[in-house]
Length: 337
Image 1 (cartoon, rainbow, N blue to C red):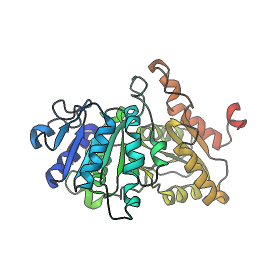
Image 2 (spheres, helix red, strand yellow):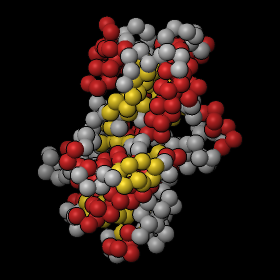
Image 3 (cartoon, rainbow, N blue to C red):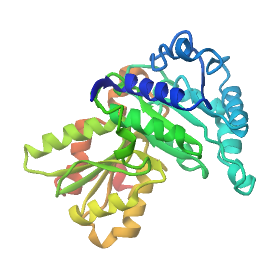
C-alpha cells in the first residue's frame, strides 16, 4: 500500500497504463511540459516522450476528434479536458461520433477512448470551471460514464477505463484531488470491483443515501453526524453513472425504506431523477416515504462567493434525511411540483 492523493493516484494509473500498453496515448492542453493544470500528468512526457504524451492546441473538438481517429486505428487514447465547462466545445464529437460509431458500424468498430474531466464546485472557481455536466453524457447511448471519489478508485477505475473497449467519460472531482488515501498499485485490478458496480461505503439501516464523486465524503460526514442522533444512514457511492448499478441501490432501499439522492448537478432531469424514478418503479412497495433529491439549483453556476449556497453540503443532506423521516415538511417550491 502507498499513501497517495487522488491526483497522484490518477497519475500513477496513467503511468502504469502507458508502461503496460504501447497503444495508450495521452492528449490534452498543457499535459506534457506543464504536467496539466492539476499536475496529474506531471513527469509523464519526460518518461514516455512527446509522441505518447501530446500537448495539443486549445481546441477540444479537435482533441476529441483526433482521439476518435486514433482509436479507429488501434490506439487507446486518453484525453484530458482541462476544466468541466470546456467539454461543451467537444460535445458534437462525443455524441455524434464517439458514442455512435460502434452501432453505426454494426459492431465492427470499437472506440476505446477515455475522456478525463475535472468536475464540480467547491474550489472558488468561475463558471465553466465548476460545473457538473454528467447528465448530458448519461443521456447519450454508447458512452460509459464513471466518477471517482477516492484515490484507490482513481487508480483502479482509470486503468479499467483505459482497458475498456467502450468510450468512457471519466469524471474527477477536483476539490478531492488532494485528499489522501491508501492505494494498492500492485494487485488492485485482480481484486477490484467491476467499473460498473456501486459500493456501500457506510452500512446503515434507516435511510439510503446515494451519491457520487465529490459528495461521497460529505455524505460520510453526514452519516457520522446522523449517528450522533441515533439515525443510521447507508451511504452508497454509485461510481458508475451509466450503466447504473440499480441492484445495489434497490437492495439497500428494500431494507431501509427511504432514499435520499445527492449530487452537485442541477435538479431538473439530473442523475438523481433517474435514480428516484427507477427506485419508484422497482421498489415502490418497500418505500416508507417519497424519495428526496438534494442537488445543485436549476441555475447557471453562480459566482464563487455564492457557491456555498449552491453546492449541497452536510446540512442540506441531513435536511433531506429529516424530510424522508417525516421530521420536517418539504420546501414550498418542492411541494408545488
